[in-house]
Length: 338
Image 1 (cartoon, helix red, strand yellow):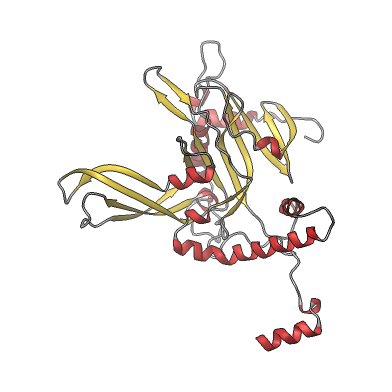
Image 2: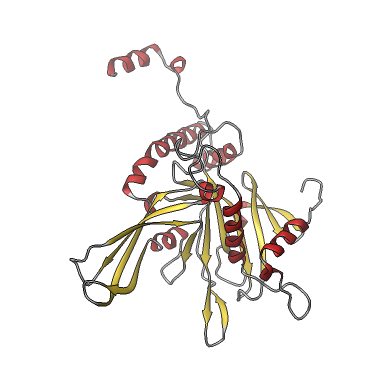
């Protein structure tokens, strides 16, 4: 990028076509046929899941499960038979899905709706099909989360995968705390408390400079994400997990067009701070983060289809008070209260 050169991913493309021949299918004109980007992403994850081992310190079967694996507790209860024992299980995913309906205006809402659904299945106590309520809560958050904006649905009349163009806002910083189980929330609180103290310190530091405040504090934190020397963002017994539930947006894949069978995909990747790179085929250009947030939909412009979030990192040096920073009076007071 700095030298203006691009590197064509020829070998990666050849491996992809060999592993998944359907992505090498060509149309009547001889060019590659349009394929669904999320299907390609999921297939790549599954291949890596089978081939890439986890780190020695992890109990997970693969690196994909270690760094991308989501685990949820699930309870399915019959809505028509209160006496029927609910069924409980653990479900595992490699990505989240954000289903879009008329009430979903923000990513957070779509993700929460994913955790509760009504289904119909056979009831052993009633001897017939009945309505069930399925509820899920996250019990393990990975360090990295991929989210599919479910924008395509099949229209039988037109026999086409139509696209939902609705505007659904997504944030730079994602907080998954509300979607976790009570036990998981308790485990996340210590790291979240440290982040809150860090935020308060940043705001205080920025407020000491005339004309600056929270906006400047947020910019300072964003820059700190790219620095060196961070606290572990995982639980000590589960390397690759998230110990805070906070995430920072790292990449977006957009689709331009009205059908999954046509259109154009573009990648948008965070480079540093609020500078991003727009990867449009072999053309790479820098853009501002504000432009990325405009990819939320609402028209025929580029619309977010896949989102990739990485861990929000807490700097080790963040204005903590040490014994040498305290006044003698403050030190005496601390001793008396302790």
